[in-house]
Image (cartoon, rainbow, N blue to C red; front, side, top):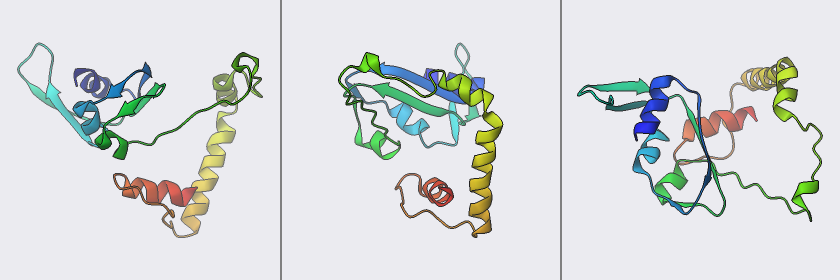
Length: 144
């Protein structure tokens, strides 16, 4: 809870935690996943503050399990590699971060074209609903 509030206070856009293990059962994270404002007590003080919750929370783990509440509030991505030797993988852009930075304008222009096309079509909703993120799913699904 305190880490999540610290992220909100800092204005950070991302909060990433890697290599989680076991079962994730965190009511503060469940609340933060959908709350527009986070409120908590400042460390060392008796005052409570509310901060906009604008961060994207990301977690990774192998065979990680989590509560049903958290499952409804997140988008899961499963990454798998079925090649024989993982160390022998070759990537088209080995420095993906650097590649995206060098071509930032091109990627942002492509995203803008998608949004402009969606607007020209009357902003239709996407085909798949998500129980906890209905408006987000409708907009992003419509754009894509």
